[in-house]
Amino acid sequence: QVQLVESGGGLVQAGGSLRLSCTASGRTLRSYHMGWFRQAPGKERECVAAIGTSSLSTYYADFVKDRFVISRDYAENTVSLQMNDLKPEDTAVFYCAARASSYYSNDIFRHPDDYGYWGQGTQVTVSS
Image (cartoon, rainbow, N blue to C red; front, side):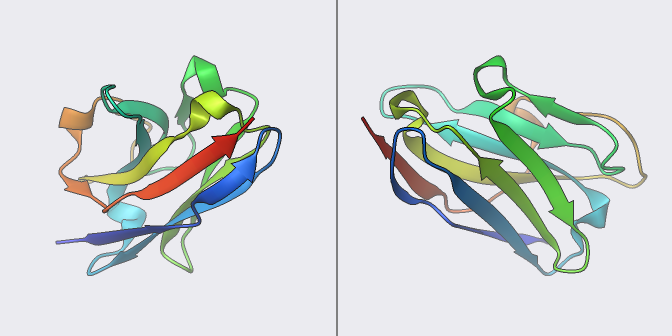
């Protein structure tokens, strides 16, 4: 099994940037589709960005397009989420998620139920 640990959250002013990292242990992330999700108080968990095992395909929710970038670092076995131009409405707990795959593909998974492995989450708070 793969264990996921998020880091990089914190408090930032509107317009600022944060870089979240998801570090994996137990397995190489090459064999996993990856996603970043967020959950604000009283709201459902929603997909922010996702990346396929081939890394050639990515998905971004409309509300983060042109602001966030998801990427893999195979050497470090991490998946990162660079967040720029943060807004108060981005305030949430951000989670890293992994879905095992037996082959490289451009498939993208956006629903929380598609993922079987989750990190503990990291808080992102954006002040106005």
